[in-house]
Image 1 (cartoon, rainbow, N blue to C red):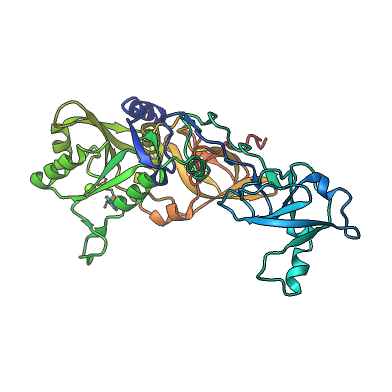
Image 2: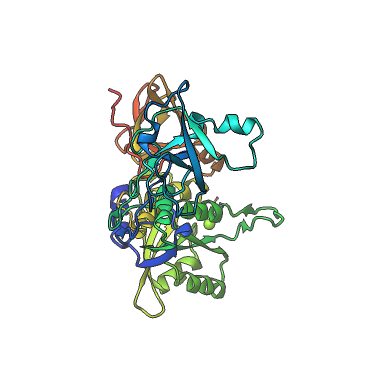
Length: 430
Ligand code: AMP
Ligand code: MG
């Protein structure tokens, strides 16, 4: 029997970050930046108005108030996206819209609300541009002006290599004008379900058969963690069909199979996999998920080794072993350095028993009450009860040497829906 950590280390030692690719920024969500990104422009490029209003000189507004407005001559208008050739001079103003570059000579923008623009419009001066405007407030140098380069300066290092791209980083790249960026490639993960009892979704269910759910839970896990699933379908006990599927998997970066690889099984799947590389069958000290296969397949040109993870067939076991072993492998290939699910401490609300000395991953519902997380079990913990996985948002991890936990005990919980980037709350319960 090997520990969860040993199994994980062996798997991780066989995968490395993938090569760099150039991708359109819209496709890069969650990928790791493979270059330092510098700006070739100022953002904003020019001083511009932060409000709709009038571009003015400060001295022309000195002393302005509701009772003693300053009258200015309106000499023109600048809409967003245009640069005015006019200049604000003594006693004049230019009507300006938010985002429009501030005309020469102007020192501030007085917003419409502090002028008589609305009043003039209300009395029917709607279509025509106002010829003069009354200003009710003193302007201050730079008021309502966004300075050129206040967000980003020319030549600035904006995003460093190694950053995971979130929507904000994608937006920043767009603001620099980058249409594409260098990122670490996403792993393509081939997914194969095995078993004569399996039927594809959408087809009638004959007696004795079950629908193949692992393909779908595993494929969506792959996608959730940033990989590209390549669904190979269901392998039957037939060498030709299997050879064909294994051949397809050799173009991928990793192969994940489910079922058909446990100790006792006689299976062509095992033989065919063994013929394409090396494979070991592990007994991992965990529940669910004891039987696990790990191997390295040779690519047809012999230059590459494709890691193969053989998950147990039970739907819950395959998901939990995926979380422990496939997820960190995918994240490592994506170039991520934070590979762990955030683990928090929680107060157990239900009794929990595990008598066989294996690490127990129990499905649980985590809620926060009075400042502490509480873990309630989802109900029966059988490894075939997939709805218990659907009900859960965390896995209570009961260590190998703990046989039982009582309500009120503090337990460790892996937060399934929290991204690896989340720092778990540091406060400990006791
Ligand atoms: P095995 O590992 O082949 O002994 O399978 C263990 C259990 O998981 C059996 O009850 C299988 O029917 C079930 N199982 C195997 N593969 C799948 C799958 N792709 N989808 C749903 N259940 C499966
Ligand atoms: Mg089977």
